[in-house]
Image (cartoon, rainbow, N blue to C red):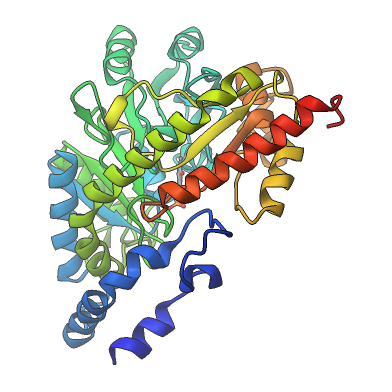
Length: 406
Ligand SMILES: *Cc1c(COP(=O)(O)O)cnc(C)c1O
């Protein structure tokens, strides 16, 4: 059963299944982590089939306990996706209608959707250009008498400074809710992602640092009451079967099958993160000569605690090649890239009713034009990184020899 079962679960790219040639460099290769775990995954799935406890089965509670311990928190509650973890978590923390919630403008829209789903009023804040992290001075200026919470996003795998967050929260009596969807096991200033605030949300979208074979998410918290409310919210708002107390409850549980797979992957996570960090250092080292040509990596202010969900460079206005041109050339050379994210939240058509416009968040807007995410996953090789950088190097040198044609 092992092989055919795995075959039916396999949804990864073609290139991932062939041996990684030096030529093509995939952005992410999920088969790299799943291949060696095939037998274990089949076994875990077989065990769930045997028990038949597909909804909130024993693997869910077991994984919740293991994940809470890994984050250094008391409680973890598995939900359907990271977006629901944000919405449920804020609701459970008592954040809702009439409450202003600070969040960065340059995040994946799910952060904003989560805040809106909780019924709160989102207040967007600009970021720092060099780290792409939420600008806490700008956040402080945006505080009003209605501000109740701040949702820092540990973007690309780097935590927003816990000390700065805690001191801001203390000065203004704010609740901290971390969006840690890109930062499983990240650390900074002695804190682990998910342990800084009242609660935090993680995502297990397949390409996240810890990914399921489908969707999944987790709410973590030190507070038993918050965890209890999220358990109700994920299960139709029920406190016990057929007794419903939470009006915003819905159906959003972490599948038993996903929990079983995530649980067997969890022991590998620290090592995978370490590999990402080493590969990032390799990129940093080889990209150094391109700094004077205007290509600079997003700055790492947290050393080995940065878990590099993404490795992002900025193609600044000093670069002789424009970002889009550079990206097209790199893709033509068989190197997959991404842009995280091309449109900041405040300029998305869906959220025009929030009343923001172009020019409101200059750093976030500039970044969206400059950023380029390069291939990053634990199985990437130093040779592949050197190839990516040499393609960038060739493009930039060619362009600086001829006048700027874009
Ligand atoms: C992935 C992600 C989410 C949402 O998680 P889903 O599991 O896809 O719902 C939220 N915030 C950030 C920053 C993310 O990267």
